[in-house]
Image (cartoon, rainbow, N blue to C red):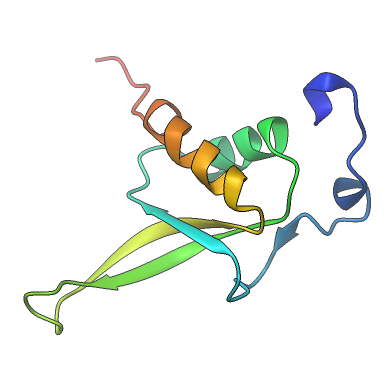
Length: 98
């Protein structure tokens, strides 16, 4: 983690963020309320494992023809998915004042 002055080899070689979601990753879907950069910056600063971020399509149980699109972050380390899920309400909030 960068804030503890440790270099992550996955960051150095560009292997940390994946372009696809492997089946063994733990997926955390959510409605996006901030920019994707805010989410990825938080992940890079606070977590150390590999992750995927992208679109997530969810169908409702009542009517399978209705599909809802969300964003999802998937983590290789299950404990990082739990940590991200706990902090998600504080990260993913509107920061706009009117």
